[in-house]
Image (cartoon, rainbow, N blue to C red):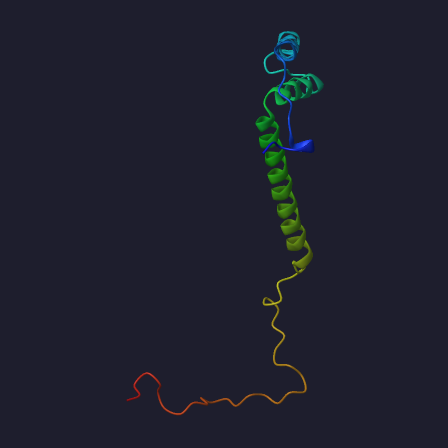
Length: 117
């Protein structure tokens, strides 16, 4: 069964493929290999993606994974700064709570647990 609609990719004719390869070569010759100029590099990469659609798929997957990783790390750092207290509460000796009777002073358990038989 033939693929339908937008999922079908028409193969390039030989003259179209040659024209794309020559344009990519021209960009490499003018701007270096790989092109140093950002616009030239984008144009070069897009031309090569026309020839090899799998290359575009890999690029998009890489961009999505990088964006996801950055979003997760920024959320983590925001949470750390938001939840961090100004002072460590354990360093201040506040003493027993007020209004509550103090606990008994002695041992509350009966006998030694370790030597129980």
